[in-house]
Length: 181
Image (cartoon, rainbow, N blue to C red; front, side, top):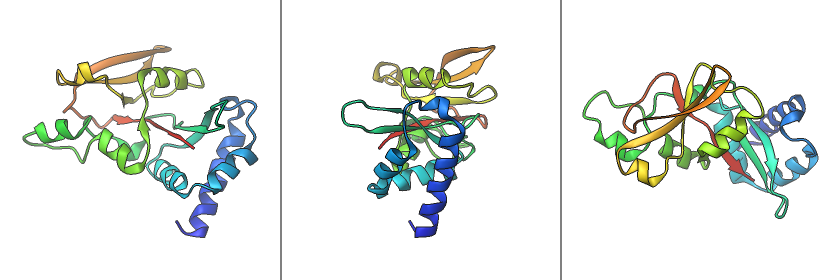
């Protein structure tokens, strides 16, 4: 990453951090920045999250090792990560009208992790997300082995978890992810 891109990213992350202090009470930006400056892979992943519309922000810190957790905090599922099926197996199973890719592969290429159902629910405690869209979440192997995949959204003031065929894709469904730095 070029120095100017790095600085622009850090400024965007800092501005978002300061605007949303309720997401990370007790965490100082200087500590986050110090951790980021020593981790070019994390900066690359955060840049990908930013470029695809995720609006990453700090949502927590591990007490023992001091790692920070970033998560997509865009109001709706990130625009650059929509219209994807769940994983490679699902993508390969489509005979026609294949989507541009899969959530699992895209996340891996970006160096980030799909949220679990539990993490998605935790995120929803910090605000109201996916009121018009939905997001794939990490699907347990027993469900995936039967051809299904899970996604979540927020409607009527509640968080819902649904299932769909893993090969399905919709313009309003993407995925949210996290990054531990």
